[in-house]
Image (cartoon, rainbow, N blue to C red; front, side, top):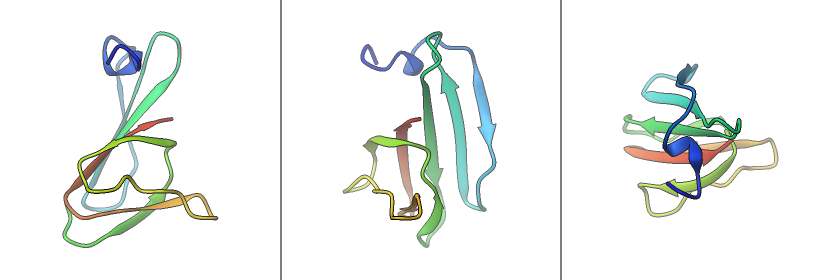
Length: 83
């Protein structure tokens, strides 16, 4: 958390639009650097626009963006992103 101020004190939480089965939110630190969290509760993979650089994933491998800037979220996985 010390390396990512948005994981600690910040300016609040913004809920983001996301497909069914995905909860997405953004939290910004006082310095303006956002951390985005995507929690996919569905049972099938889902493709979403990449919110940034994957910092941590509850799955085996953090998702990587494709040529179109999209990522595939694995089922039952939460990913923390540096936006």
